[in-house]
Amino acid sequence: MHLKAIYTETEDCKDCYKCIRQCPTKAIKVNNNLASVVDDLCIYCGHCVIACPTGAKKVRDGISQAKQLLEQKHQVYVSLAPAFIAEYGQEANIVIQKLHALGFAGVSETALGAQEVSTQVGQYLHGRENGVYISSACPSVVELVRKYYPQHTMAITPFLSPMLAHAKMLRKWYGNAIGVVFIGPCIAKKAEADGAPNLVDVALTFKELNQWLNNETISTTNENHKLVPHQAAAGALYPLGGGMINTIDKDARSQFMSFTGQNMVRSVLDDLDNLGKESPLFLELLACEEGCINGPGVDCTNGIATKLQAIKSNFETKNEETHPQNTNINIERDFFNIIPNETRTYQSEDIKDALFSIGKKTAMDELNCGGCGYDTCREFTKALLSNHAETDMCVSYMRMVAHDKATILLQKIPSGVVIIDNTQKVLEMNAAFARLLGEEMELCFEVNKGLKGFDMSEMGEFASYFETALLTGKEYHEIPIQEKGRNYQLSIFNIQKNRLVAGILQSPRQTEFRHDIVEKRTREVIQKNMETVQKIAFLLGENASFTDSLLNSILDEHQH
Image 1 (cartoon, rainbow, N blue to C red):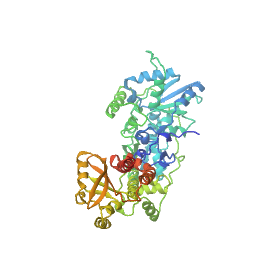
Image 2: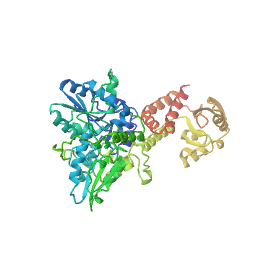
Image 3: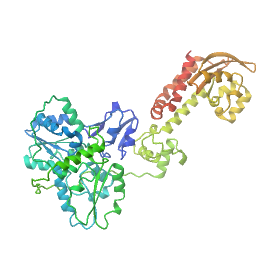
Image 4: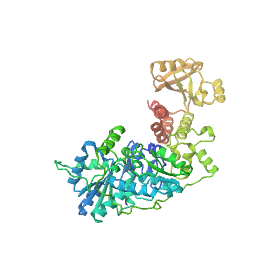
């Protein structure tokens, strides 16, 4: 089956939900703790690919397909995106030489197609009375509009993108039998090429090209391979925010605005109904901040200012195009091939039930901590209802589950267990501990379950052992103590040295007490609780691993 432009290598996914946090459309589905891309919802912006810490989010490799094309076609031409100057700088000519050495018949600038798009968009805008017109140059924006703002589809200017327009021009110049490989900074171009296989055979990113070149042994010469059929001029500005606008022959009545980045673009689209009422408004919308020079397929580590300067300097050295543009080529198209995202609505009762399933019983429970990757608890519950999320993605819910499991463990252990902080205050105590200390302490426990906040120094002389353990980090193992005429065995061990200690109190008269029972019950709970604790520890760090430390410490103590 043909791989989508972005996919998940499931073995590498560590369910950290960073891809969900970074995805502007939440086009991620989590199933069995594995996060996969939902292609029908994806706009191919590449945010998840960049954010994934393990590299589980992959971009479909086009190198092997390009190599196969070179073997099958007599002539294959490169459509090289204008951002190549920002990517390669002074090495640009060397890269062009290497592309010829790989077997490409010629390298041509996609900017030539951009210039043709600008020419026809300018003609299209002339004479328009009013309305909003959105550039078709950015395929990620086109996907966003069609899938999430379908009511504005008609606002997209009805022309091919520069890549597709250029591919059509190349086939007109060199014959339809040629192969065309686009190389640029954009992942979305792969999906766009999939939709127009008659124009573009393969779309590669700069990262892929660099990988290809690094794997080949290519020697360069002083031979100068010129761009075919000639250099571009104004189209070289397209990778910058506002670059397209600068190439359009403007109508005096029309207004022109440029916005870059997902947040800005979505903000504009949300407000689109209020624009263009008095005069034509052309919007150049680019999904990547500052434009294509910051695309997800770039490999260059230069700063954004250096890249911008490279593009502008390259443009300033160009002469205005002396070759006539091919204005006879038809680059018109529509955008009805992209299926809009079906927006599902849920009843308030459904959302309430979903919130209840993750322990959210009141508005105060909706923490919006962002641990699951969604902006709000309600957005997360909608994902739950859409089967795109799982309950154990909720960090606060999982922490509650882990705490409940640990509490059950403490209460079921036949010996007394208490946890003390560095101020000698009780954090947790089980009923057995209170019962062993006598009727008075048992009554206190009934009033305040767990005796949280109780001062350990008021519990008896053996409290000094806890004080010593906290100050020195010393641990005690089954030491005999006497309290109010009763004999006990006390063990104290560190959970967090000098900060948290746990004590286990037992009486020789406890005929029902057996080490093997404690160990068996503890081990069973640890087995069930481990996945929960590991997930919380991964998402929240040291504080969340507290339960894991406690359970293992208790088990270790009873094995000594």
